[in-house]
Image (cartoon, rainbow, N blue to C red; front, side):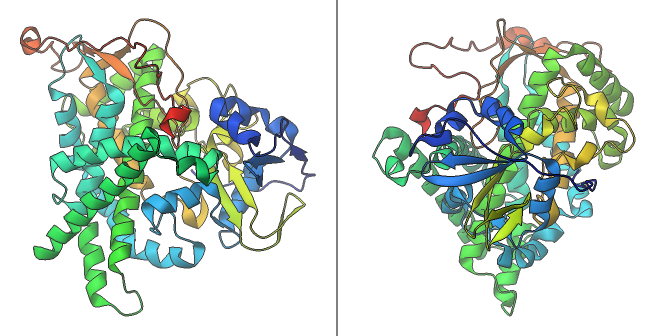
Length: 490
């Protein structure tokens, strides 16, 4: 999904976003109406100046320029306000480390995410997905966002830590993650440190969540050190720690890698799955095609490794969801030296931003970008999209190390749930998800409807014994809508 078609020489355009105010600047626009603000920028130029607090920054709006930047990781390193905040949570693991450290770290972790290793986890993925929806009942209201985050947290913790993170601890990580994600976004777009040092309830929740995740990971590592070696990522890290030498791994790096991969490996796939179910419920023809494929390929049994290539439309639904509502929607980089981009000089230390959401909604690359059309990914050669504009997992040497694992777990989860249930929106308008640190619905409640047309499908007979738990209507104390991340969550 990351090969860029070379562009012929062209005259790049440079512009400035409107509405710059001292200190507040475009951070407020990004916070209040982020997607509308992003969509307004390409009309200003291929490279557009914006302000984040007192910082001068540049938004890259053309896929060719984005690929140029992502290929040159030595010049455009991970940095800027986003990664400053992420490093405070994740340390210097593979997700956030500078260019000089990345190759060593990636080589160390790569065996865990090779195709053969991912395939070995397929049965576990299917078991967890089946367990997730086994006890749902017709008419039951399900918090889909929480259910998907619980699923992905359990799966990634299994890969990283085997059984070292108990179910209760994994559930606590899920709750902490929700608080961390809410706080990260506003800290990125309004990078004024004094605001977040205030002892507000939201700031205290954020700091406590960060501390608690660290405590849980440290406890799991300490327990493993006292036990027998295991074949998981923690075992790989501890073995490297003991070996020492040039590739020595410190205790701090063990911690940083686990926190980084646990948080990123839980949040983004869960947001994509929640978005997919929300989109399918609004597009019955796509849902019908998905169900037809799942029924034909699986015939009511759990998906296995050999089934994944045959679930072409299921994968297309996920790819289109990643295009339409990419969980990773906004990223920052920082220049490590004086350089030129789009013919414009950027001094060392310049903050540069790019947005997969913006590229994925460019009509020049994806006609009718607002429509949910999984069929666009069934055409030959469509995997990267025109101009290589589809970059849900980034591109170049810093492409997400867990992309194969994420696609496998999402395919298994979507096929498993879709083989048993339809998920329906509650009556009334569906609130569009509001971006936070990631893009996706954070409070998506849907109604379960059994798929009686599926192979072996029948309404669960225990429904009368397990009535649907009511979901309280939002009142004055619950003013949030799906995905809302207001200032009170800073």
